[in-house]
Image (cartoon, rainbow, N blue to C red):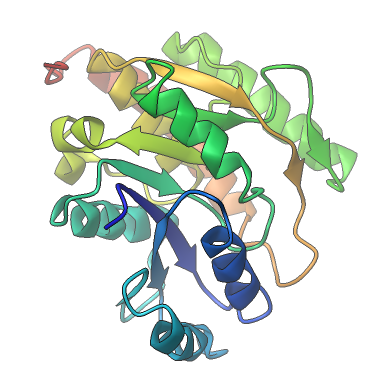
Length: 245
């Protein structure tokens, strides 16, 4: 039994899913994987089921009936993980924009470095992004600046989606109250962990834009984040957050 579970949400990732699974399982530390598939019409889930024959104890699949947001997929995955005995729960994309080798560094930050949440950060040591158009680099970079200004988070990469949580974080932060489903979900999770008193540490990583498949980012998701940050900050004045024990 591994102490670590990697959550990989998928929608039409047939070009990447087998390779990312094999890359994680090839690491020197044992990780388990939960693929959360939103009824991908390209057969992503079928590929995972085939691989489950080979990795019967390590690879798990949670199939959802519809595509209703990254945040909802991760919340389903978090609840699945909490129903099991995993101590460290990770968020990671299927498309290799997050290097599987960096899972080891996130693990070390939480298991030995004192972090409750470890973030694979694109901006803590500059701008470490490869193959993104400059317009998207600037949008992402200044979005993080905007979030820091509004929320007070001392985090360089507030929108990062490559993270490790200690189990206690997910048990504390009242997952049923996390409401954003798109880009703002990543911000809300960090902000809530911060307000609950957890220690958040950034680990510098290099983000490489996907080579295969299609990005799920769109204008609606970005707008949710812009408005959502203001809403998060305002509502935080009236909410009592549970505190780290």
